[in-house]
Each structure stands twice: as structure tokens, then as C-alpha cells.
Image (cartoon, helix red, strand yellow):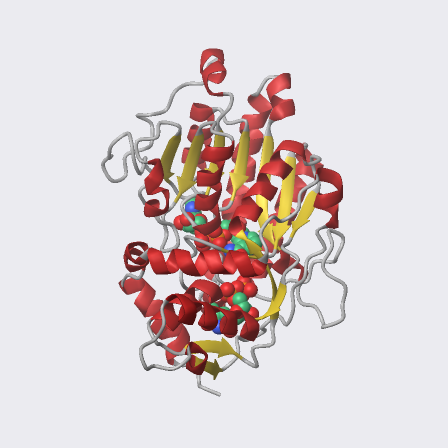
Length: 391
Ligand code: NAD
Ligand code: TYD
């Protein structure tokens, strides 16, 4: 497994320990780097948006630890090439030794943990990797964070935060008239993905309760926006609509999700990091509940408007109902009143304007799209949709 720096700092021979760039812990070093944050999964969809956003809004150095799985893409960060304040390190979060070395070398004031396996359908097809990365990986990070934190001066210990990025899916599913999920809703995860995130949330809580590690947890609804891997609903439907391919709707299409524009998620995370109360969890949502079928018809109309089809008819005609996802959660809805009341955060983007921006981004970034739709992507498409019967 390659755990060397992905950019800047050159290559290293396979199997050589990650030591050549390790700088021993000294007070001088800490003085120089006290603004740094360490982000995990910062080459994925939300993580890369967060890093780009952080550079503009805050601008302090970021060490970006990412394994660059099929979902991680260094091209998302291409605009930071040559930017000395950002370093992408290819590393598995399950590799305790390297994670420990990176913490000691960079002396971050915070860790923001995005790295995860994140697609529910993949967690149904192959749950093992979800347990490894989401549960064991989070444990490794917490344990290394604890060791690092205990070595800090009292003043630095006060400042340090471990922010864990999680999902509303840990709360399970809602009926049409149920109240939205709040921070006190009981956990009831239904998919292997949701169960692995729930387990990680519990570990985060335990490291605070038992060891005093200053943690924060955010549970967010479905994100959409630029750089989302096109296995998820919104980018998949935009690209299929553009290319005149079938638009596969699971079940009756009436499952409801609450949608949040990714930049709003990034601003919420920054807010919680700076002002959240240690040990607390904060729900983050977009106040935009939509049924899947409504999301997809809106995408069809936007693509028709931006790229009219010569003689092919309206893209709504491409909608195809297919066999449902097993255990498919019916409805997610977020009550985000705590983060709004305590920290003054609210989403800035309306779903309709955010979706329009997102469709435009995918239409204008064909090169990025071609870069992520590799052989492995096509294999997944075949595996997930090939055997799904049309209804
Ligand atoms: P993503 O799948 O797009 O990106 C995940 C990133 O983690 C990738 O860059 C991947 O290379 C990296 N990664 C995976 N395994 C790793 C490992 N073992 N070591 C190091 N890096 C590894 O996911 P996303 O949609 O950006 O989600 C980010 C986080 O936000 C996840 O924790 C997810 O549970 C959470 N979340 C996502 C959503 C959503 O709608 N996408 C909503 C709420 C919460
Ligand atoms: P997805 O983007 O996978 O997010 P999540 O499962 O984490 O909510 O799916 C969003 C919704 O869209 C979900 O109800 C499943 C549905 N869906 C389809 O109907 N067809 C598809 O091809 C995909 C990928 C999802």
C-alpha cells in the first residue's frame, strides 16, 4: 500500500516506511505550524470541496490524508497545484504508524475526518470495506489523535478539535408524517453503510467520554454539487440524461431525501469547528425535502433547457423504474434548529438554484467526467444496474 506523499516530496520505494519526511516534535516546529489542520478524505466529493473552500475562506495550511480509492481524485484539487499551503498525502487511515507520524510532523490544531466508504449500494454489494475504513479507520484516527493530544501543552490541548463528519442515515428511516431527525433521535441504521457510520459515531463519543478527547460530530443530509462521483443519484442522472441513457429510479421513486448544497455543508463544518461545543453533535440539513422522482424530472428539464435534444424528445422520457434497493430507507429529514440557534448557521443555497449550478458544472466539465469514468466505474455500473430488473 502506497503511503507516501501523493504530490510534492517525490516518490518512495514500495514498502519503505514513511520516515524520510518525518520531523521530530519540537516547540519550534509547533510554533511554525500551529494553524495547520489535518483533513482525511480531502480528495473525495465533500472533502475536496471543503479543502478548496477552506483555502479561500481561512487560508491556513491543510494536510490532506487520502487513500485515493475509486472515489478519491487528485484532479479535484488541481487548482491548488503549486500551492504550498496544501499537501496531499496518499495514506490509508487504517495505517496507525503513518497517521501518528503525520500528526507529529504537522502538529495540526484540528482534524476534520471525511474519509469513508460512502455509497449505500456498494455497502450492500460489499460491506467489508465499509467496516474496515469507516469503523476501524475511525478508531485508528481517534487513537492516534488521543496520543498526539495528550502530548500537547495545556494551551494547545485546549485548542485542539477532532471533528467527525457523519450522516443523517444513522437515524434510520421516517414515515411521511414523522418529525425530522434531531440530535436526540435514537440511532437505527438500516444499511451496512449507515451501521458503519453509526459505529464510528459511537467510537467518537466514547473517546470524548472516556479519554476527554475534544470531539465534535456533525450528522448531515444528502449533499450535491461539483465533484460528486457519478454513482450517486444527482450526478448519475445528469450524465445519463445528457447522453440519452435510461434514468434508473429505484422502486416507486417516492423516497424522500433532504438535499444540501455542498458549499453549505462546508460552511457548516467550519462553523462547528470554530464555535461548536466540545462533545456535542450537530445536525446539518438543507430544508429541502424532495422525492427522488421530482429531483430527476427537474434534472431532465434543466438538461433539456441547457442542451436541447435535436429530435430526441424530452429527457423525462428516459425515466425507467427499476427494482428497488434492498432495505431502501423511505424518508430522511433533518431538524437543524440546534446549529442555527447555537451557532447561527443556515444554508445559503436554495435547492433549485443549487441544482441549476450543479447541472451546469457537469455539462461544462466533461474532461473531469471522462477522467473519473474509468474501467472500474463501468464495472460498477454493470454490477449495480445490469441485473436490476425493469419494473
Ligand atoms: P466520497 O466517497 O466522495 O469520498 C471519500 C474519500 O475518502 C475519498 O477521497 C477516498 O479516497 C477516501 N478514503 C476512502 N477510504 C479511505 C481510507 N481507508 N483511508 C484514507 N482515505 C480513504 O465521500 P463523500 O460523499 O465526500 O463523503 C465524505 C464524508 O461525508 C463521509 O464520511 C460520508 O459518510 C459523509 N457524508 C456524506 C454525505 C453525502 O451526501 N455525500 C452526506 C452526509 C455525510
Ligand atoms: P444516493 O445518491 O445513493 O444517496 P443515499 O442512498 O445515501 O440517500 O441515493 C439517493 C436516493 O436516490 C436514494 O433514495 C436512492 C435513489 N437512487 C435511485 O433511485 N436510482 C439510482 O440509480 C441511485 C444511485 C439512487
